[in-house]
Image 1 (tube, one colour):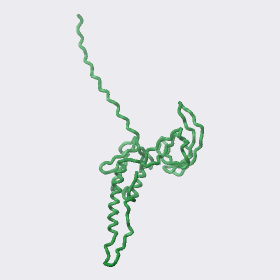
Image 2: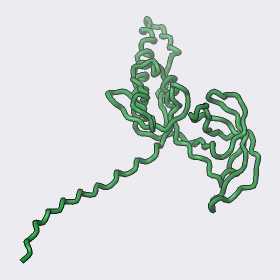
Image 3: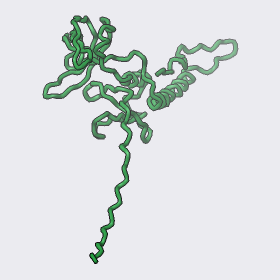
Image 4: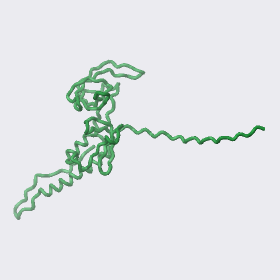
Length: 228
């Protein structure tokens, strides 16, 4: 009679952990203070400050804006910060090159040498049309675009570029609740301060029979509103 074999218990299989969902691409771009180039970014208000987090960069690259910082010391400064944000610029589709017109604002990949690529804005001056090709059943644009750089190290220079470096700037403003709430809170402080300045600028009533002069320093609440 054969000896019974001792069965080795099977190791339980590790549970299959589903892959984490891919994070959607950033909905906005931000023009960095360090080099004035455009980057994909996300926002969060942390400890009362606006934190700008760059896509694919370490936390050390984050930029911060405190409500009391010099960068936000006036309504004009708040508006300037708002202008640093915009909707993400999609790459130009090869089949849609005919939609471009001279004067359109573009965002182009700029070779900084050493393999580094940064994105800066330019204006389209002309389109040199060329027959499109088909590669792997996909249309490939062979047109050349004459552009004038408006930002970056080549600002003021003219170049001819291909579709592979062209992104289209969206005309509609950025709609982001984090940015809107933060800037609205900062703008309200200027409204309170200016209201106090208006009251202080008005002199006390004059004696009987005399009309008090009206101060020309007036502030409209509509001038302090910001739309996004």
